[in-house]
Figure (cartoon, rainbow, N blue to C red):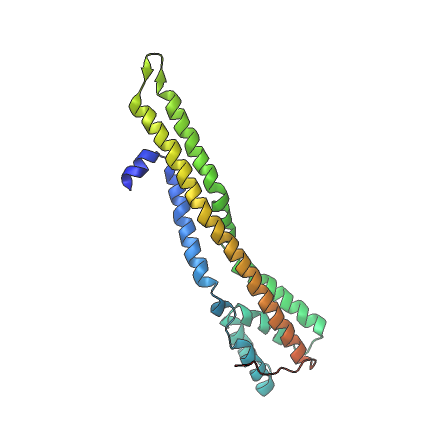
Length: 207
């Protein structure tokens, strides 16, 4: 591995740093964006049950907000349970925007790596081409310098593409997952508003 890094020249270190950051972000987002962490399966039913049994208290709201992103959204609605539907929905939307922003954390960085990696690879290719041209002289060419220039050009191009492809795939995947989770939270929050205002009968979920 060290021999490959040596052959690829100093530009490869930028790509190596980008690859380490990308892997770290992919692992972190895969843990943070688990559906069970964002939308706990039984949380909505528990919130409705607690509200009907004992109403709303500050302690309940604080525990709910700290539970999960869905809990944060639902607590914003419950905090305004005596207000109109419009005020409740506005509070829920504000909390939802903040939650969505938190869930998209680091995705911009991952997308930037996906975009910049081929450019960093191209930068290494240019450095390799300069090395190749520098190997030429009126008396002939320097085979060692020529081979080193070719290695720099090819390795950096390959590494740039190899980093960009998985980074782009995971960036798109996580962006889509965040959008789906946000929609699910919005539906549950709207259902809570209807239940609190007595405009929907909350039948038990099957199973």
